[in-house]
Length: 95
Image (cartoon, rainbow, N blue to C red; front, side, top):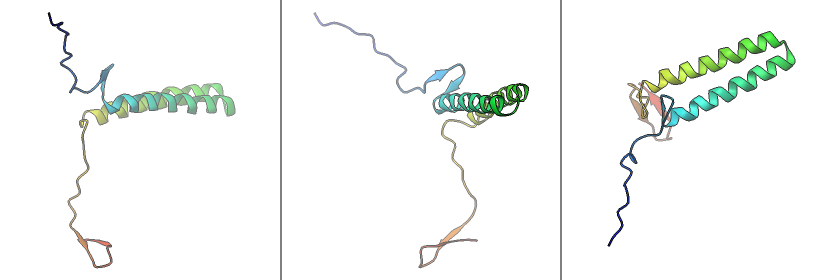
């Protein structure tokens, strides 16, 4: 008799962790690590209190920025409304 194995149906969905999806998980991790490094450097070089403020501000700011960019979607692309004309030297001229 053949064995039946359960098939995971969510293979085509992006990974979700704490509300962040796909590439924004890595953006959130990067903002946390950047905040920790900036806060630690400021604490060791300048002042403990200023370092704590910079640590909290950069972590919260980075996570809010990541959440705001996530609302645009996973596959946002920038589109320009300019018209580009290639001359015979390969240079782009903007009209």
